[in-house]
Image (tube, rainbow, N blue to C red; front, side):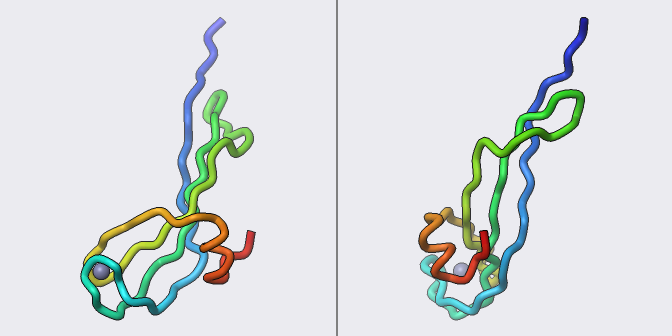
Length: 78
Ligand SMILES: [Zn+2]
């Protein structure tokens, strides 16, 4: 019997924030996003095994992970 098993990662945009970038030092819009990874069986996603938060600067494009506590402080709704 053949079982198709895999992973699926989705990125969900939570908010748009105006912050000073830690890389280019410009005040620019930042995407606050959540990246979830789920195992799949026959291409059907199951449960979340990894959930990470991050910010991406729209001026220079740099992206970095932040903690869940920081994401909640920035207004992410879980
Ligand atoms: Zn930047």
